[in-house]
Image (cartoon, rainbow, N blue to C red):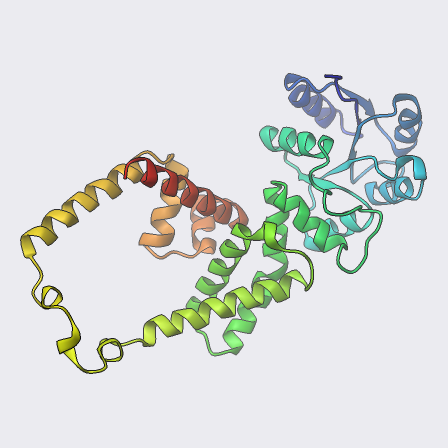
Length: 320
């Protein structure tokens, strides 16, 4: 298999050396350019398979350079990954609107950088749409979602940052307490992350997350409102006698077996995932509170909860 060629346009020497070392260890050699002008010249000489582009350059900015390349038929389909310390949603959306395929935030996480570069070389982030054809359905927000679907956790954190407070305001306006609004919003973003591959862009992401949140609120209200009398129709004689007088010994034994099973299942899950599971589902902490305690972004907490649920399900099935 032919080794891919990668060009990295970056003016800071520390990052040049760092990216060279990270990708070099993974068998991906890179060529360097320090300015936008040098980058354009190197593109003609190298004809790379991928361009890694810093946002802040001494003679231009990454957005302008990316947009210029997308207007040139020769570079219209070149995968472009942007590196930036900027995490504001409008800046990420600006990058995607200029034609970037993916984003990697600074400071760099080596496995994440390798993963994003490999995914871009494989054409994964933009597989549902050409970033040079930004229709309403395949605009910058849709490309941001595609990046998240392809495994870019920071991209999903940007979506959380963009819409979390707006969603909570809508929930509060519907009569939810601040605590309930926080919990419903966190649950909605977790469920949206789990189903992100189903998003097709027929509506905005906010409309989608809004529907998930209010659907969750509706079903919680239904679960809370169903009483014992409603189930029995106020006629307890319809219940089997075994429900009225349970076998206490059998119940205690079953509970002990179940507790042992649960304890063993949790014990095989890596500690970071086990901790978020306990804090979120047992102690009832919101993703925001867990994020503050662990000093990590809320989006990372949600991705850990999602992964923890997968590990828990796999472990439970193996030991059932």
